[in-house]
Image (cartoon, rainbow over all chains, first blue to last red; front, side):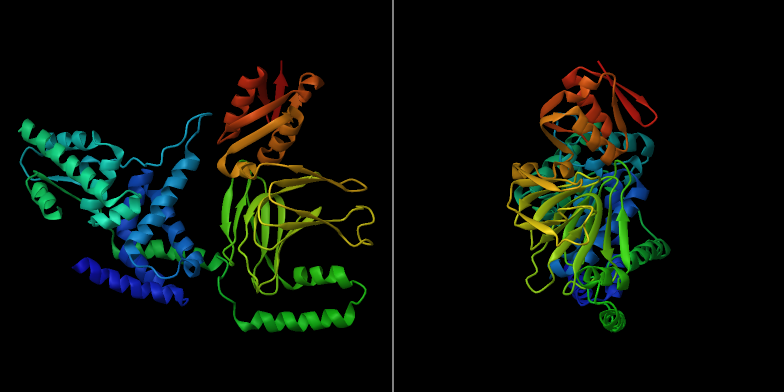
Length: 187
Length: 303
C-alpha cells in the first residue's frame, strides 16, 4: 500500500528530527502540509487560523520531540496534535456560560465546492448534496471528511478522534447509507 | 467492510474534492515555521562558545567581587545570561514549554523571563512578574528549578504549583509535590539577612504580607482549586468584593470602585466558570444583585 511506504519514509524523517535535524522536519512538513492545512481550515472555519494552527503544531512537535520519542504512525500523530490544538483554540475562543460544558467536537462544514457532481444538472445536485451532508451529525461529518478527503484508514481515524474502531465504521457506514437512500429517492 | 463502503461510494453520483496547494505555498508556510523555530528555546545544549565565555566572566567576578558573595551568585547569572521574556496582556493567557519539558501557564498581565542559553544542569532559574501555574519536570541530575519574583523565590524539585505575584501580597499554592518558598523576612534590611524559608505540602497556600516585617500565612486549599484560572474557573470562599477587585485589577487591568465603602465587604462563596471579564462581572451582578457601570477602565459597583 502506498500509504505504508509513505509512513516508513515519514518515520525515517522523524528519527532524524529526534537527532536534531530541522531539515527532516521540513521534509515531513512538505509531505503533510496539504492534508493538515485542509483539516485545520475546516475545523476552524478560517484559512488564516488554519495556517497558524499548523505552524503551532510543528513548533510544538519540535520542542517536545525528545519527550515524544519514536512515532509509529506519523501522519495520524500530527493529525492528533492538530486536532487537539484546534479544539483548544476553539474552546478558548468560545464563550462559556456559567453552567454549560463546552463540547469536544468541532463542526466540519462541507461546502458545495467540496463536491464534484457527475451529472448535467450540476447546480441542483450540488445544493442537494450540500444540504444532505450538512444534515449529518458533527461526528459523521468528521469521519467522512477524514475517510474520503484525507483518505485515512479507519484505525487512524479512530486514533485521531478518540473513538473506537467499531464506532468509526458504524458512523461511516450509516452516513453513506443515509446519503445514498436520500439521493436515490430524489432521482 | 472497506471494500463494501467503496462500492457504495462509487454508486453515489458525486465524489469528493480536496483543495490542493502549490509547492510555493508549502514553502512559504515552512518559512514562517522556520523563523519561529529560531526564536524557540533550543532543546539541546547550545554550542560550546557561550559556555567558555561564561566561564571566563565567572572567574573574573570571583577574583574581583568577594563582598557580593551570596547575592553575586544570583547576579552573575543575571549578568552573563541573556534573558528571553514572554509576556501577556490583560485578559490574555499563554502556555509555554520550557527546554526541560516543564510547562508554564502564564496568566494575564504577566511576564516570564527565561535564560536564553538554557543549561538545565547549571541553572533552572526563571523570573516571574504576575501569575503563572508551573508543572515542573523532575530532574535529579539538573539544577533545582527556581522561580524568582519581586518578594519571594520558590525552589522546586518537581511539582505543580501556582505563583501569584502581581503586587506586594504574593501567594504560592501547591498542587502536587513539594516546594520551598524563600522570602526576606525584613524588607527594609533585605540585604543583610539571610532569606527565611517556608516549606509547603500539597493543598497549602501561603500569602506573604510584604511590609516592613514579612509574616507568611498558610491556609489549606483543595488541590483541584489550585490555579483554577487555567480552566477559567473561579473558586470563592467568603471572598470579599475588595479582594476580587484586587484580582480583577491585576489580571484584567480594571479598577473596582464602590458607591458605598460597605459594598467592598460583601462576599461571594461558590464556584463558577467564566471565560472573560464580562462573564465574571455578569455572575457577580446576578449573585450579589448589584449594578456595575463601566467608565473607561474603572468599574463602579452600585447598589
